[in-house]
Image 1 (cartoon, one colour):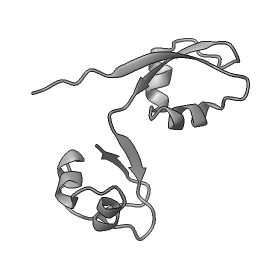
Image 2 (image 1 turned 45 degrees about the vertical axis):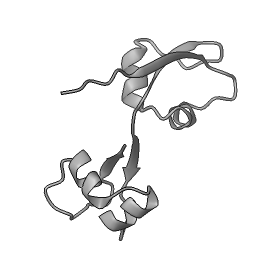
Image 3 (image 1 turned 90 degrees about the horizontal axis):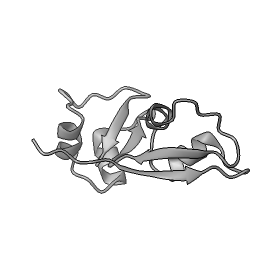
Image 4 (image 1 turned 30 degrees about the horizontal axis):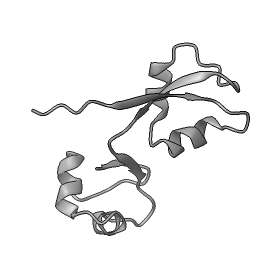
Length: 100
Protein backbone atom coordinates (compact mmCIF):
# COMPACT_ATOMS: atom_id res chain seq x y z
CA UNK A 1 0.00 0.00 0.00
CA UNK A 2 1.36 3.39 -1.01
CA UNK A 3 0.80 6.28 1.38
CA UNK A 4 0.54 9.80 0.08
CA UNK A 5 1.51 12.64 2.38
CA UNK A 6 -0.99 15.46 2.60
CA UNK A 7 0.06 18.90 1.44
CA UNK A 8 -0.37 21.37 4.32
CA UNK A 9 0.44 25.05 4.65
CA UNK A 10 -0.44 28.06 6.79
CA UNK A 11 -2.68 30.84 5.56
CA UNK A 12 -3.38 34.19 7.22
CA UNK A 13 -7.08 35.02 7.17
CA UNK A 14 -7.98 38.27 5.43
CA UNK A 15 -10.85 40.54 6.42
CA UNK A 16 -12.90 39.55 3.36
CA UNK A 17 -12.36 35.77 3.76
CA UNK A 18 -15.30 33.44 4.28
CA UNK A 19 -14.76 30.01 5.87
CA UNK A 20 -16.61 28.03 3.16
CA UNK A 21 -14.97 30.00 0.34
CA UNK A 22 -11.54 29.36 1.89
CA UNK A 23 -12.19 25.61 1.97
CA UNK A 24 -13.31 25.64 -1.67
CA UNK A 25 -10.42 27.89 -2.77
CA UNK A 26 -7.79 25.52 -1.38
CA UNK A 27 -9.59 22.22 -2.16
CA UNK A 28 -9.73 21.29 1.51
CA UNK A 29 -12.62 20.24 3.70
CA UNK A 30 -14.18 21.56 6.90
CA UNK A 31 -13.03 18.54 8.93
CA UNK A 32 -9.39 19.02 7.89
CA UNK A 33 -9.36 22.70 8.82
CA UNK A 34 -11.09 22.15 12.17
CA UNK A 35 -8.90 19.15 13.02
CA UNK A 36 -5.71 21.12 12.25
CA UNK A 37 -6.75 24.20 14.26
CA UNK A 38 -7.97 23.43 17.79
CA UNK A 39 -9.23 26.89 18.73
CA UNK A 40 -10.14 28.43 15.40
CA UNK A 41 -11.98 31.75 15.77
CA UNK A 42 -11.69 32.69 12.07
CA UNK A 43 -10.86 36.37 12.48
CA UNK A 44 -8.77 38.60 10.22
CA UNK A 45 -5.07 38.15 10.92
CA UNK A 46 -5.41 34.67 12.42
CA UNK A 47 -3.21 31.95 10.93
CA UNK A 48 -4.85 28.66 9.99
CA UNK A 49 -3.29 25.39 8.94
CA UNK A 50 -4.90 24.15 5.73
CA UNK A 51 -4.51 20.60 4.42
CA UNK A 52 -5.15 20.22 0.72
CA UNK A 53 -7.08 17.15 -0.43
CA UNK A 54 -5.63 15.12 -3.26
CA UNK A 55 -9.17 14.80 -4.56
CA UNK A 56 -12.27 16.91 -5.04
CA UNK A 57 -15.69 15.99 -3.75
CA UNK A 58 -18.67 15.85 -6.09
CA UNK A 59 -22.14 15.92 -4.56
CA UNK A 60 -24.61 13.94 -6.65
CA UNK A 61 -27.50 16.02 -8.01
CA UNK A 62 -30.94 14.81 -9.11
CA UNK A 63 -30.91 12.73 -12.31
CA UNK A 64 -27.08 12.48 -12.42
CA UNK A 65 -25.55 9.16 -13.41
CA UNK A 66 -22.03 7.81 -13.09
CA UNK A 67 -21.65 8.34 -16.84
CA UNK A 68 -22.59 12.03 -16.47
CA UNK A 69 -20.14 12.54 -13.62
CA UNK A 70 -17.35 10.66 -15.40
CA UNK A 71 -17.81 12.90 -18.47
CA UNK A 72 -17.92 16.02 -16.32
CA UNK A 73 -14.48 15.27 -14.85
CA UNK A 74 -13.04 13.48 -17.89
CA UNK A 75 -12.66 10.23 -15.94
CA UNK A 76 -13.60 6.64 -16.65
CA UNK A 77 -16.76 5.37 -14.98
CA UNK A 78 -14.91 2.28 -13.72
CA UNK A 79 -12.32 4.48 -11.98
CA UNK A 80 -15.10 6.35 -10.13
CA UNK A 81 -16.56 3.01 -9.03
CA UNK A 82 -13.20 1.76 -7.74
CA UNK A 83 -12.15 5.05 -6.10
CA UNK A 84 -15.43 5.27 -4.19
CA UNK A 85 -15.80 1.56 -3.33
CA UNK A 86 -19.20 1.44 -5.02
CA UNK A 87 -20.91 -1.93 -5.19
CA UNK A 88 -23.42 -0.84 -7.83
CA UNK A 89 -24.00 2.03 -10.24
CA UNK A 90 -27.02 3.37 -8.36
CA UNK A 91 -26.34 6.82 -6.87
CA UNK A 92 -28.26 8.79 -4.28
CA UNK A 93 -29.02 12.51 -4.36
CA UNK A 94 -26.56 14.19 -2.01
CA UNK A 95 -24.08 11.32 -2.12
CA UNK A 96 -20.43 12.44 -1.99
CA UNK A 97 -18.05 11.02 -4.59
CA UNK A 98 -14.29 11.49 -4.50
CA UNK A 99 -12.77 12.51 -7.82
CA UNK A 100 -9.01 11.87 -8.03
